[in-house]
Length: 128
Image (cartoon, rainbow, N blue to C red; front, side, top):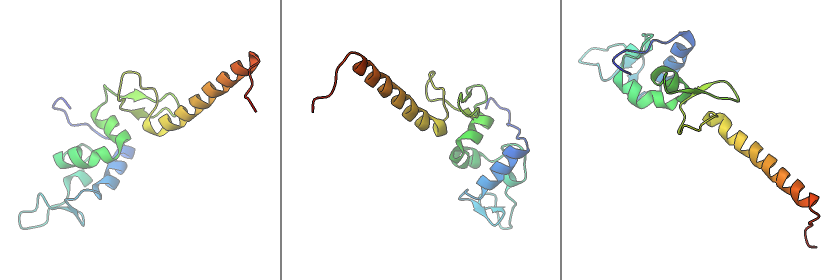
C-alpha cells in the first residue's frame, strides 16, 4: 500500500459497507475494538478510504475483486473474458477466478474435438 490509503469510488464504498457486516468486531454499527466503555461507530462503515487494519487484513480478502481494485492496483490484470480486474497467481494468468474454470472446460472441449478430428482424418476408428 506504500503508505497511502486507497480511496474508493461509490460502488466500491457500497461493496465495502456490505462487507463490514462480515467483520467479527462489528456489533450493530459499532466497533468492538474501539469500544472503551462507550460505543464507537465503526470507522470503515463511514469512510471512503481503508481506515481499519483489521478490515483490510481479515475481511477485505472475502471479496477478491474489491481487494485487487483497492490494494493491488499495480499488480492486477484485466480478465480477457469478462473485463473485470483480478490479482493473477502467476505471470501467465489471463482469466479471473470466476471465468477460469469455464474457460478451462471450453479449451479442453476444443482440444479433444481437434484430437478426434485428427484421428478420424487418418482413418483410425475405435475397435468394436
